[in-house]
Length: 225
Image (cartoon, rainbow, N blue to C red):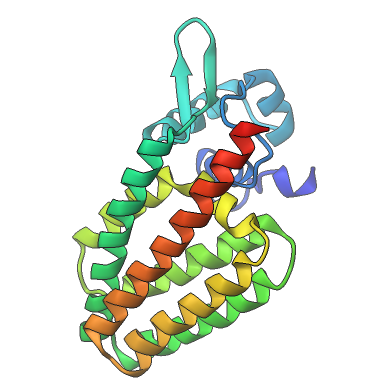
């Protein structure tokens, strides 16, 4: 419960609750289709109903929450077709981001990507789902920072918000953590060391294809049980 409490001296309450609730959904604490009861969320995060409603509206805009008429907010449920479409778009955008990073990133940004990869290795060696996702988010933030393109990060973050649950599925699959580290290492090598745009693009696209395959299989398995 301590991890779910907001820190009132830090970011605005709504932003903190959005981040905490997003992490809880992605980590599987709330299942797809599960009702999000406002009173319980108020007690969990120790905030007002107004803050909870604002947070739910934000997550609805990201595609993680669905407002069902006469039934209230629920965790959104993605169809397999929607998931495949999102991964296709994510692959194209991440490939472009990798190529742009290789072309434009500074030496400092390259070093930052290397450091972010080290954090991913450390996080994925553990079992904390939240830390794994935070480390992956930090890696992508470092990658996007080096693109020198103001549009790609906005578009990619929008898509990534929709596939957050699926990232949780893929990273939680047996053996996937090690594969993911190897794929990110190849992206880092191509983009930050070799400075090869096409190799970086290909590495990013391969990473997304592998993640999609695992996530879609895990989605099918969970719905069959």
